[in-house]
Image (cartoon, rainbow, N blue to C red):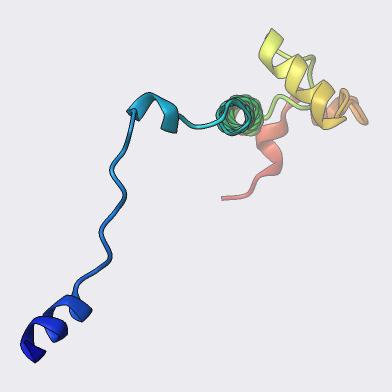
Length: 108
């Protein structure tokens, strides 16, 4: 008999039998909180993606203008005009001689 007592003491207590599984549904407050969390996460991901996309397009437009040496002229296209406006850069027309041949300023 002592062995039976030891074996019983090592076992986990038995779970009570469930009457009806439908009675153990999560409360609506918990479900609403989970849904609100997912909606917030989705909105944050969408906004973060939009901001990242705008920054990437601006970086490409700035790099293209830098390759073309076009900051001394009017913006060649709509993307360049928008990039200049968002970066706060206007027309760099300080000297007419510089605007004529910007490639002559670079020494190789």
